[in-house]
Length: 98
Length: 228
Image (tube, rainbow over all chains, first blue to last red; front, top):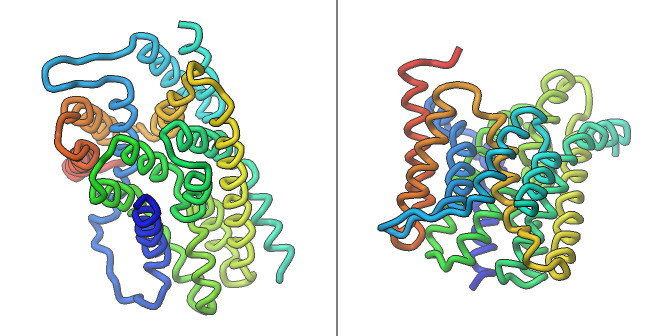
């Protein structure tokens, strides 16, 4: 089953990528499309970051202090260095130490 | 084969691999630790071939999410490729079908970023499709090799190294530099809140609700108060 889902999502990706130069050139993107799409990466990635740091089971919130601290240090690191590798290494080392 | 354009594309991509390779490693590790087989993890990098959406796919799959949630999350994350496709289309009009298929498959954030500069400055005078091929193939190869390396690491590194935590860290490294103004910050905050408090929603639909909530919040604020 995973193969079917994987191939279908791969196909959707491929269709998006060739959508505008595949011959269907008459598709017109509404101007607001660009505005909405520009927020997709921020929104999706933030949701994943939050859900891996804090969980809520309907009644109470639970979190791991070490991971929260490491995440805050990673945010500072990303602001200062803008480097994926540095942020990743500093964040991992923090969570190992705590 | 225009080797000069091809290698210009390869060279333009090299600095960006610093961000891509750790991400590929992390994805490989995650695939294995989420219970996918080595073959599934490695082939996903060429079938889906889109970093963030592969991570979301694997996490949602491991959590036993509904297939439509996995499919629509991946589609939502990759919707931006339609914009890239539209931007490069006018430079690729004269290419054969085969070329368009190959360049379309290789279109990613990174290859778009390096190619659009070259296309807009030399699109008329040079065979820039070789530039796109060079940059696209370089990224593709780096993504495949780093995934394989991650899969090998994932099968050997003990679990208490907390490597799964590399996912939120990688995403923090990607998102934080994008938070430049009020709409982007509000978008991130709304999405985080919905993601935390929506976790008991059925079939893991929290991810879609959180994503749409953040997008709507950001885009509406921008509409009232346009970016300068």
